[in-house]
Length: 183
Image 1 (cartoon, rainbow, N blue to C red):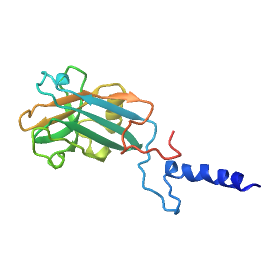
Image 2: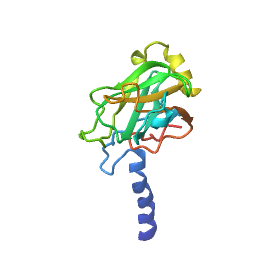
Image 3: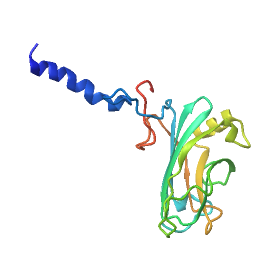
Image 4: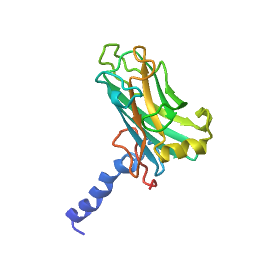
């Protein structure tokens, strides 16, 4: 075998290692492994009920991590004095019932200016869902009957809101890294 063919046979597998969560040293890079259910919401003041004012915006992504765990990643901008990020059961255009608290005092990035941003991420399990069963909560997500809301000290009833929709592929979010075994 020529030297070029031998090198060509080594380059492709080496290039694929980071995609598989591996490094060339044999140390596995930590990844979040998710199944095939993903939910995303675009947050705007106009989605609030009643409509809120301002130019804040954001996105929240959810992904089922196991039968009883969901991972989340939220981002937002032009929000000051964030007091919480919550998931509610409820239809678009109507106020619903708070079912999951994603964050409260730990929501805000290091900024306290009027253009502050949020960037919480993590997981929650079935024990964090209140008011409905885990299966009912999943059904709400799957049918678009759940939304996410960000509250601030200036907008305690909601600064931005977004209805969750389903997706068959993971969000374009660094927190959501697929493992080679995920569908």
